[in-house]
Length: 215
Image 1 (cartoon, one colour):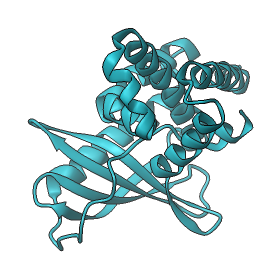
Image 2 (cartoon, helix red, strand yellow):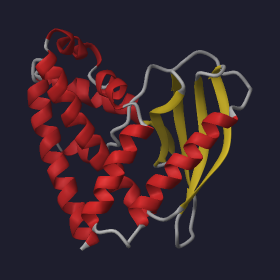
Image 3 (cartoon, rainbow, N blue to C red):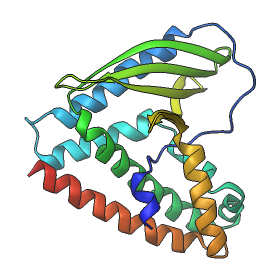
Image 4 (cartoon, rainbow, N blue to C red):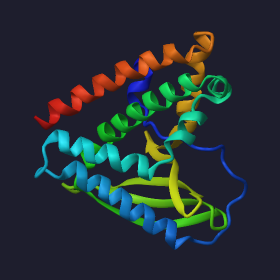
């Protein structure tokens, strides 16, 4: 289970074809507003830790397309969910709780920091956009470059993947996570419930760590 600890629980569709050169101001505004709100929530010490968590838990599913992400990270094993609605509901809930805990754990060090959107590129005009941003730590230092893969669904935008620079390499986290999940599922004969047991343990561990830091 140790490999999960460094993962960020956000997901993505497979990468789209050659990008268009146009920017998308609407997707840029969406990232600017929602990412800023998430960071403000984590840094708001006027709220109790439980209030911050409740607010953050409400914000993140609005920002990211959790059901799409949850299905993607299972790869070929996701077919099990189509025939078993109880398993699908249990998996979606478990993955959502895990993903939100990872968001909070990873982003807490940037709580109250400023995020600045710097660019965007339309992969599919008006629908599929990569938004480029940087998060500036509160106490100065090097800004963290972050890219957001945005998909328009109906009248709104949702995050479907996040790219970070990790040890000098750009990593699209959902694709890496899918690879790791598939390896675990392959060793466990595709047992999604065994995977959920790991995720619940990791979620509880992250929650304890977050609570200890905020005490």
